Amino acid sequence: MEMFLQLILNGAVVGSTYAVVALGFTLAFTVLRVINFAHPEIFMIGMFGGLAVASYTDSLWLALLGGALVAGIAGIILERLIIRPLYNRDVLMTLIATLGVGIVLQNGMAVVVGPDAVSFPALLPRGGVEVGLLSLSYKQLFNFAVCISILGVISGYVRLTLWGKATQAVAERPGVAAVFGINVARISQVTIVAASALGGIAAVSVGTLYGTASAYVGVLYGLKSFVCMLVAGNRYFEGVIVVAFGLGILEALVTGYLSSGLRDAVAFSVLIGVLLLRPQGLFGSYTAKV
Image 1 (cartoon, rainbow, N blue to C red):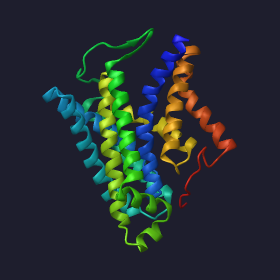
Image 2 (image 1 turned 30 degrees about the horizontal axis):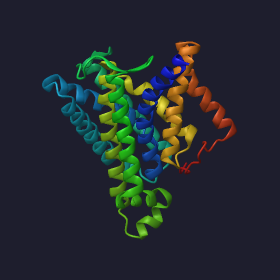
Image 3 (image 1 turned 45 degrees about the horizontal axis):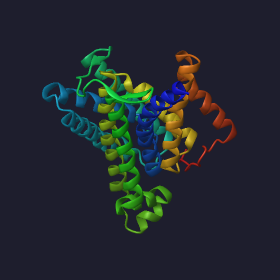
């Protein structure tokens, strides 16, 4: 039983990061009806932005701020130069365009820092918290706390603020929202930038957790998080969060009881099963223009 509970805890830590990246996909698709495949690479850029700040300051909080700032600026540029000109066009056009941007960012960073992972400064003390036979390191606890805070901020913003309610209106009926005076372009820009900046914060937290940063880190998190959005559907943010945590826990259980080699196959096995039985996702989806 102790092993089972420990795996649940470890899986929840990983799942919380999946949830943050998956919400970046979900926000873009829900509000703009675009699939932003550059989002995982913006996550990666945020990680290296935090790494650069941490290397000079040894400050965890400045590193988080640096990651948010760098990723947010990248989000502004992406929205203005790529996503906005293709708004209301075929969803495949934006998918291919953002995928191309992601590939450029990934390979460009690999040229700058090299293809191998680089060390991330140790910004948290060693050790952790133990309850009986269960334990979590300070790095795991910090990563979990950061991701949960980000999820809370996103949920509170969407559900409780005027801008969030405008975002919901744009997601439901963008044409009607525009008629009622909502600036759809501004809402779309804020959505992309906010998702990018919050993803940058999570990326710095992940770098602190694992002690490394890689130009290819976005590939893994991007694929898993995109699967979470497809499995949950994109209508309800909370549904994506539930699926992301479930995937992280399921992967941990498979790794602990079966084999680590099967871990990455879990996500796509779940995806295939859901698409066969419920193509719109477990919690329902908005449609895209194709």
